[in-house]
Image (cartoon, rainbow, N blue to C red; front, side, top):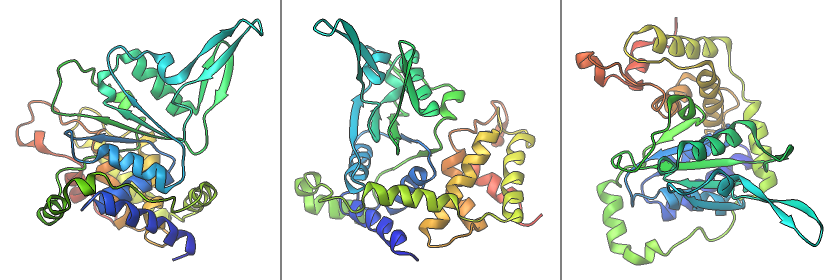
Length: 308
């Protein structure tokens, strides 16, 4: 394990102080960032979604913005707009919150579809176009979007094509009994805690992202990923199987997980560690399939052999 690996593990430790009992979810979020993806968190209020996003930004020494999405938020409120400067007799572009290195898009499903699309297009292209000019987004650029899967009133569900823009979906869930007991003992003091200082620099993060891209994937490993992806299309249990984009994302996330484990090569266990988070929001069971309606990513892992 290199010093750079150990630095990223310190990020996990820093977040473990303020987000009790969520070490695996923190590592998945880091893997998503290192794999150049974006993260969708689906969960009920009060389980730490905002704490995770803001803690990551501070620990990684990145600029961040938070946008609370509502029905009246317009695309220009996210991407920015041109303001006329009377003293200069010209328009000047005022960047929106999307021009930050970490953007927390809170309750994205409460925004109108055109506002959702404006953000998701920026995520896909890495730039914003305004009045015939193109403005590149910062590097790194990481979106953490949240939505409450329980409340549907006044919301606009993300279509499948837009969900596919997110590399991973996480569910933080409630803390386990020991973590929740610790939370209750520490009470408001814990809620007031924050990540104390940056753990790594921006340049170290960019170096880590480059190292992740160089993690080796053998032919046998790629074939395993290919079998998983193609099984989701041929098994007949899902409305849509995984797209080629999802397959590439699965490989990227597996590289990131392997690198965080201190290896320069990917093992099947790395693929299995990230598969549910990469595939879960992309696989919708067919209606009217009886018991098959409960099938999900874990069933795919069980059905597809590691060795052909």
